Length: 238
Image (cartoon, rainbow, N blue to C red):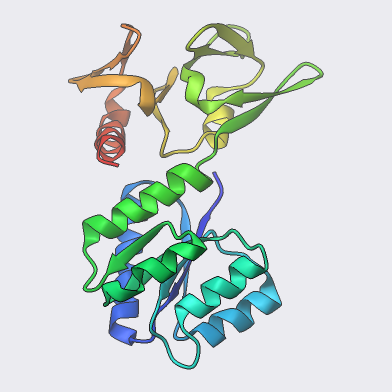
């Protein structure tokens, strides 16, 4: 899974630190790897982008900054056809109509509410950045498989794994540990030495059993119990 890169542009140092802290907590709970870089004004962020290019997945922009506003920077980026995700931060609703011209993910009114920030970040991640396929090798073929259709994977004979999709099963010459590295941790969890499951397809988690949406029951190993429980709760609360 790639790293979710955020730029926080806010001129009030205390608010800036609070936003960075909340973003870190929210993304850690969602098991999304992230990097956050803070900026105190739009000019500073603009200079960084000119040198480094668009390295961020989402910009959290305070609208009212110093010489240049977050709104002005957003409009300049859109003129350049830059489609980076933007979340506006503002203390005034008067900017809402003007801001929609740059198609932001969300407007967040100050003082920020944690649940609203979490919703904005989760929405952007789900729509724009969450991996949608995994590339696996099978013989001389490279197969791009849609993650949404993967129900779970299990060990098979001869050092193979079997992936159970919504409509079929298929074997691949690799280990579960190798597959685990390729799968996004927020969507998939190792629940047993012999199983990795898609949290999307888990209907219920009870005691040491996962009840899948196709009626199959899968075991949860003792050493995996806590991590599965935390991942399941985090997933359903997104």
